[in-house]
Length: 392
Image (cartoon, rainbow, N blue to C red; front, top):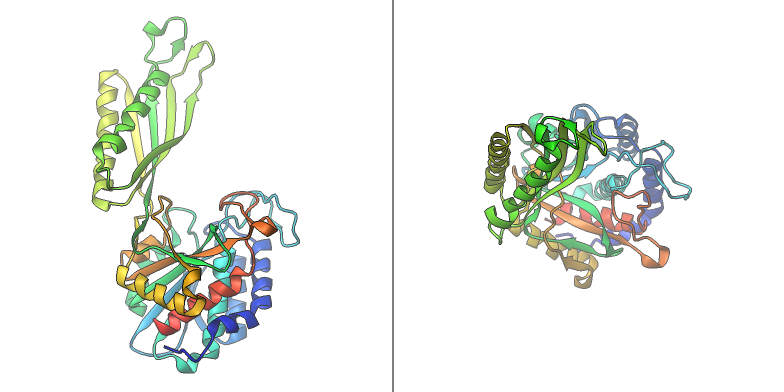
């Protein structure tokens, strides 16, 4: 371990550069699978510091950089896509693209990884192993850029012994990081259900097969999945966020109703069992009502598994760098991340970067139109990634 090098100080020396990089990316966001300008900008930054890389990953816009040599390879990852949200803020680095915004901090993640490479390049002579840095597209949209990069042969090419990633965390104060060993984030599947009945005049319901009532009953039945079919000690969530009738009015019963929701789980075996239960429940209810119910389940990201040994080791390294009081334990989350794909293929550690500063009014959650970060987080994120990569 390079105890004689203060990587936090090294991060501070490039802090203004990191601010400039982050603001450029933030002003020029791109949606999933469209990150051409962001990819070109990353390549220019890598050329500037003399780090080699290959392009075309993740279906086209992904970039993988590498430095150092050795039998062992450690991977670092950052995502780089934005969200279809109109930014509400009025700061100088507000998004210049209408309806597109870095509302999940991927601009921060990319900046931190570029900063880590700047630091690592300076100390490349100290490296006893190879480090690869993944700049990944399309975390926000299925099937996720991570799954594509794995299918394109990332493991076969680099054989990494471990992979690390970070993510902004609005509840955590700037200056702190957080970790959680073991099961950390849930799988996420999209549930779409179409209930096909028989519409008609609302005053003569006996002549109809009412999909509105069927939707209500089905939603109630679905709540048994978590309350009665799932082991209470195994976290799971089934929520429906959208219900629309096809046609209908105050005095018209429609022919169809559509439901859309999400299933979250921490257990991959139970997750598949839940899919079968949803389909069977819908099918049996449809038969009882002389109706038709179509169930479409879009398989999303798996649960994210933080390797316990690796995460405990990373926590110790982060405490060495930041001080124990700035490294906190975090609970499990039912949100999802496509970094999870990596975690099922190699030892992985996904940790959280504090960005909150109430004095500056920086408190908004991710995926909101007022999201922002305290930019002090940039050198902390860069330094922690570099420190882990060097000393793990």
